[in-house]
Length: 172
Image (cartoon, rainbow, N blue to C red; front, side):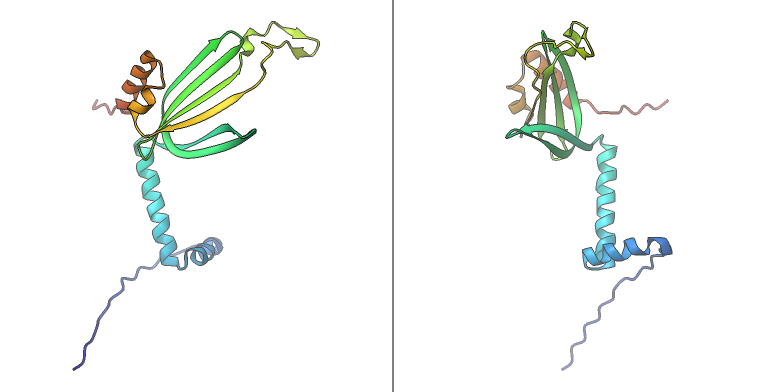
């Protein structure tokens, strides 16, 4: 008895300019094959295109951690920004929704330079004794979890913003 297995591999030609050849070779080596590199590139392209159509984009934020400023990056969209001036300090609150549906609360506190009284010599006078800049990022799994951390009126605005679509398509 003889068993024959017939496998047919689909073959497509990709034409590449000579100047792009080093890029193709490097991607092939890193991915293990040209086919793997092309498939991963197409997946990334489709995911990025879908994200952009839904209003998502790369977000990069500076956060204070253990005495250092580090950058945090994710794909999301800003739902809300609130800028509050409190005497010699300024508080900026931004709320984002991530591609995976989580919510990010980003808060920055800094000197309120609009309260500076003028120029002394070649320097602006200080708006107050606290010159520090604080940046925090807190992630929440759900909107209700985030809402309890906000004042009620701000929570209502964030809830409304999270339900709105970023672009209204007009049929005119």
